[in-house]
Length: 560
Length: 68
Image 1 (cartoon, each protein chain N blue to C red):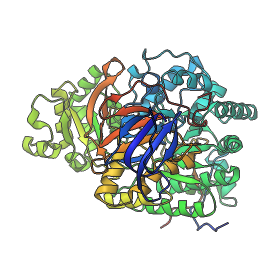
Image 2: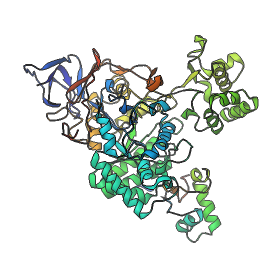
Image 3: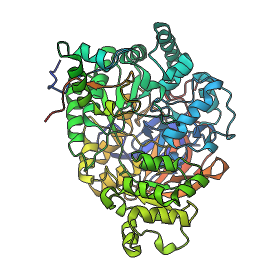
Image 4: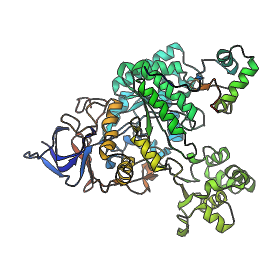
């Protein structure tokens, strides 16, 4: 044996009750579990008082680029996440011709709010094919990866500029099918597409120009491999989401493929959205279709400054246009009383600033006493309006003042807890690695296990762990992962059930060229094993062990 | 296979279709102007989108009004 994880309470991912015992790891896999295990020469990890669970699987991430300079996908790993799915929402970094790179970088920057520095000089971009990208990842991979291939990049590869102009010809369709098959052969876990996203010029991404016949043809290829179709539906419109559920069900039944859509949010503004969508999902599941709604655990909080165009302003055209200006032009516009009057009219229709009143000052201001105060309170004190105060503070601090709009939705714990416990809900949609300057996308599993399991009892520990391990592995077809059982991968998360949670959101300057992102550290996690190697521990931090694998292949496969 | 409950009817645009062509396909027998007007009123998410009047291949086009 290589490791004995000693004396923990094992929650094996199957959903069965926890039991006491040791877990033995050998050659990257679980060798034995249960009872007292003795093995000469094995290292021992003391798990007494802790839960020992399979490593968590995050099915919706955008770590595509970060993995190229950070093979541990920090801080996901320290939260117990041992397998991630990048390439969501129609975007991946392969297959991609060198001449199209800037185009796709622009999409990543617009949709996922990735800064320039993430793509500029932090890694050597030397692949075009999907297997070339996987080869680049494997050089320093410390976490398991099950990558989706993006529909938009497949379209771009085959159709070039016409990818955002027209329907594909029969020849182009055939070429896309061949290219998708190559990606699946190389290790792609499926195809992602989007019905809502726009590029850096605010024009629809290539996948949105595809007719249903094109998606059908690509789903046929997925069917040959039994692979996943992931989509971003019009989640803000219930009727359209219902139509997308029906389309996905049609493809799932026709080709025998799993499908998933993300996100599905609960909102007080549209309280019938989730019940209606879940009712349709249940009907389609009862017919044998696999249509998995992904639901995130955390409430929606958005932090922002006036430096970059936050998605918070996407529904306010005048504001969004202003936020996309260069700094000098933006300051000039925000100093122009006529321009500001138009902004206020848009943000506070009829002089009603209620929408902004609860927004809080987060930082970046010279007067520390302002931090934590609401724009509503400051507006009252200044005899102004909330949006005007937001503009004034931004101008007074050279656009550096930061704000947080907290609990914008998905924040009713009773409703969200019941939703997470639903047997047809796939826990996911973290968006980890994306929107890095708007909110921290890490620690959703800690929030599930702390807030919804321990504090509110919305679901049992065994049920919650099953959802983020064995269920996810089954839905996505990841062989040999998601369970603690002999022969399964040695992916293990060890944590204190009384402490497990996520820490407060913090600004961190660890992106290339000291770029900023919001992160959350883990709380209550004590050790994380990836493929039998101790990859993070509370005592020692991250271990620099390139033990990650392409999770679509069997654990320990030679090609991994 | 279990029956589905009734839901709002929709279609997807075919390559090259505009509002008039799609209206002729899904509302045959209805005068063109009236059919287009109906479709647009049921699909404000498309009609109000820039550039106005153009479908994207992946669009969902409702062929019935929303439930009351």
